[in-house]
Length: 280
Image (cartoon, rainbow, N blue to C red):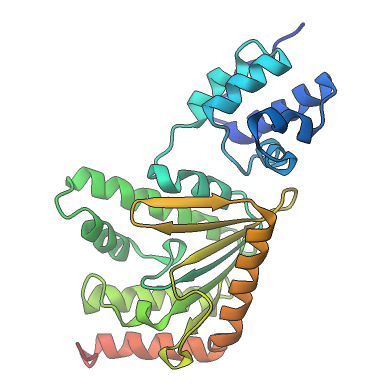
């Protein structure tokens, strides 16, 4: 039997790994449900692996090699694909985000990573790691700015961001850095590269009081949601939970200011920072 060749690390290894999984599964005459059942994962999860929207963990790779008779191919390549420049709790979400057709995100206390400037990101990471070496902070900033290259394409992915007003009012990095960051968000909105809304303090209680939320949609795989806290995060594919999170985001959209009014508020706060008028 011809064995698949190891993947070229300069290509998109996770997508190629998923493609090989699909071919090997179909060659073995197994459905996605049948392949996933011994691992206690759904057929849709196997489909996400095949589409390259989910990361293949080592325990799954061992199982695939054994069941599909692939001579250790998935185990070898899984280890290479697992290497990431992102923190462990966020790596899988960042990889899924990179192939999403739509990213919808609500942030409660800070500007979303895809919309951050370098100075703003540096201030955020320095607050997270007050004793971190400069090399570590710089690497985190570079990785965050590289994520933003997703927006180099003029239309894909669709980015819809809802910022709590608290994210505008918090002077991350000082008034100069905060003003620059808000101007950057406004510029992306004015260029129609992102839909941006602000959830004002006046909205009162809302559907995501407990924290931030990210939704990701894909061309050939079911949607995912991602929730996170300090040094932890969870990528969710359970259809019922993703449906609930989708409703949550819709409720936030309804409670937030319109994109036009949001842009006026963002630029007003930026101007206040620039003029030194923002109250402490």
